[in-house]
Image 1 (cartoon, helix red, strand yellow):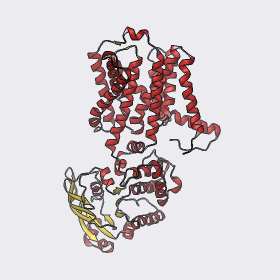
Image 2 (tube, rainbow over the protein chains, first blue to last red):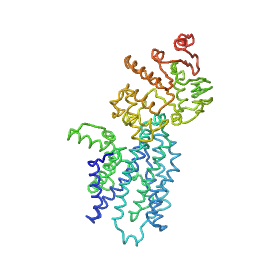
Image 3 (cartoon, each protein chain N blue to C red):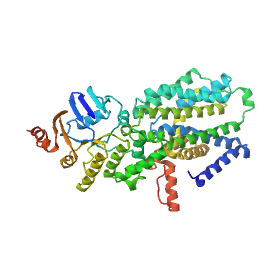
Image 4 (cartoon, chains in turn cyan, purple):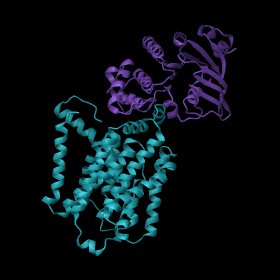
Amino acid sequence: MAVDWKKILPIVGILIFLIFVPLVTSRTDVLTWFFLTLLYIALSQSWNIIGGFAGQVNLGHAAFFGAGALTARYIWLHFGLPFPLALLGGAVAATLFAMLIGLPAFRLKGIYFVIGTLVLAEILRLVFYTILPEADVMPMKLLGTYSLNPRYYLSLLFAVLSVAAVYWVSRSRLGMGLLAVREDEEAAEASGVNTQKHKLVAFLISTFMAGLTGGIYAYYGAAFRPGGLFEPVWTFDAVIIVFVGGVGTIIGPIIGSVFFVLLKQFLSLYLPGGMHVAVFGVLFIIVVLFLPEGLVELITKVRHRLLGESSQIVS
Amino acid sequence: MFLEVSSVTKSFGGLVAVSDLDLGVNEGEIVGLIGPNGSGKTTLFNLISGVLKPEKGQIKFGGRDITGLKPHRVCQHGIARTFQLTKPFMQMTALQNVMVGRLYGSNPILSIRKSKEECESILGFMGLGGKSLARATTLGVVDRKRLEIARALATKPKLLLLDEVMSGLTPTEMEEALKLVKAIGDSGVTLIVVEHVMKAILDISSRLIVLNYGEKIAEGKPQEVVNDKKVIEAYLGD
């Protein structure tokens, strides 16, 4: 296959830029902003697989992010094992939990699946606020040498890997099957697609990625309450990013994450604490009603109007 | 017998939709399946394709028992179907719709790239050659019916169940559709065709089976069957 330099060069350029960011600046606010954007890319791409491609609106994503984060944190800080091992352990824990939940959860259809998964995450949140009420703080020894740079590079690596994973899925037979499941389960079955298996596989890939993202957060956070890892924001931030950016696309969650973190930081300067959520709620409704394919669609439309390019299908 | 339905029963609540039905189809036949509304034609399709499980009886295909298999397994065994109300994958292109069938049906091609070429030619055969990159949402009713058949064909069926693909077509469109169905039959696919348009069904069927209240009331050569007293009664009442 011919290499399309027009597509690859900008990607390489952006990557080189991102690699050099911590070398150019040591401002923690800038680095944190980049870190969060990259973390959200990984988180939203993980939701994109189950919600965007397989069309299963999983509102319990926080459960798997939290399971990954808490497991990784415990393996790393409380059992004292090397962090990479903890990271993997967290992802495996999230996936195992998904296996346990997945089979019964996918017996639920439509709105029942949505409610069921939402309740699942809420139960975990309440349980962990109750059994682990104290904030989990990094030991002084680690805080003394704490640096954002390794966190930043880890999130960069995982953002890239998550985009690559979604790219691979979108180009694969599996991706084609997932789209078919999303569009019409009965027709997918009639065409030979094992819908139950596809939903489960998408769920496992998605939760593995969510678990890894949680692990990065466990590595980043100096102190947090374990219950907070299961807060619904982890689900809804991802859902909003995916829908605002462009559901079921590769580029959508990237654009969505950049836009989301930017707007969140901007709004928090001018609005009283927490009010940005209301703005995002309104934005979400507007996008779903008028721009069902998200900012990706908007950008394509604007570009066509400006350049007069012939319209073509963007997938 | 290629397809053998033996004493199959399926009821919904108190209503018996298919009642102790025996029915056989030989390889290479085009069997017309007719009957008044609610006579159990679509239920029979759902039973054969695995959407519904029979309460009683057995369905054998090519000598193998396929009773109670999940729809995707039935499809992989070589039985494809279309839906009365077409069910395209709306946000996918026509080509992608057909590729799903080719990638997952019986004898699937596992490579996206290789399946593409073949699916283009299936679309061409169904008269959708120029529309492979159009999303299904943008297609009209007739094209959606063509797409529905194209996707079913892409699963490489040995037996194809067509559920009212001619309804709502203009006479010219129906002529074309008939040609296509015959061409599918000529390519070696066995067909069971449910249709309300009598002219169409008489034209293509090599044999006719008539259902009423979930039971087979007549079977045989098309011209003879439509003159059968019981069949006329079923359609027109006593």
